[in-house]
Image (cartoon, rainbow, N blue to C red; front, side, top):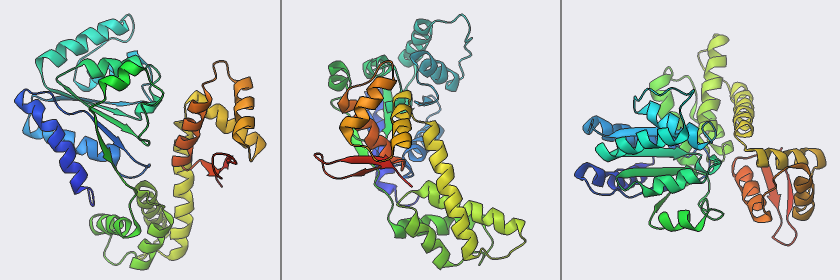
Amino acid sequence: MLHRGNERQVIADNLRPILEGFPPIDMLIYGPPGTGKSAMAQYVVEELKKHSPQVLSGTVDGFGQPSRFEVYYKLLRDMNEFVMRDGTSTEKLVDMFEEKARKQPMVVVLDEVDQIKDEKVLFDMSRYQKVAVILIANRRDIFASLDDRIRSSFSGIEEIRFKAYDEKELVDILEDRVKYGLRNNSVRSRELQKIASHASGDARIAINSLKLAAQKAETKGLKEIPGELIEESFSTAVEQNKSVSLQKLNDQQKALYKVLKERGEVRPGELYEVYESQVDSPRSKRSMRRYMKDMHDKGLVDIRGSTQDRIYSLQD
């Protein structure tokens, strides 16, 4: 991956101790969407396994596996452990996982970690001394609202920040995709620059824009991707990205998003009052602010003003 050499090296260095029988360094990889967090974590883990086949690994998507049962079920399946869903208790899965963790070095990647509903998962993971835990999130403050025991257990975690790509870096990434995926001279540099300038540091949107434009050009029988297809494809890529982000909101965030959709611009006090009246188990005002910041990072919500005169609204 281009422009992520330093981050790759830090992740690899933190995992190296498990090969020598020592406790690894747990990591929190954080940064805005589309900065390569998940892809880089997976790449380093797979490279580690190529050199050391005895290493086991599993990856959990906090959105797709939000419960404790789903987390351990997915991890065991990733480690080629056949498990019957029906009739198997969560504690049985935990016991099976712990037995594996005692016998072989292991890496666990918890992606979208803030979407995992059961805090006990994080408490569990903090107890496994020989398991390297990689947490991935958009925000740095994922421990702020968690139990003191969890915060204490992860107090030594190493934070690795993935900054948004700048325009030049995005152009380099797009040029690399062109080099290995498209015909020579199929797209001009100024069109790649146009994509990069509008992508707000998000490589996923930039890459998808190029991919969609190339597909449309091929369908039309064009040898070169024109600027109008770039514009169309960029809008489509943004909408697709927004759709995915909406699907990954938790129930509390969906309730807040619904209020904004119905009311337009809303101040924090009014937003919380309406939200509190519409959900069965409303979270605290602090949690609400955290949810709003997360949706802002995902490009769904606009936040204007200072703390005293803040206004929330949906992004166009």
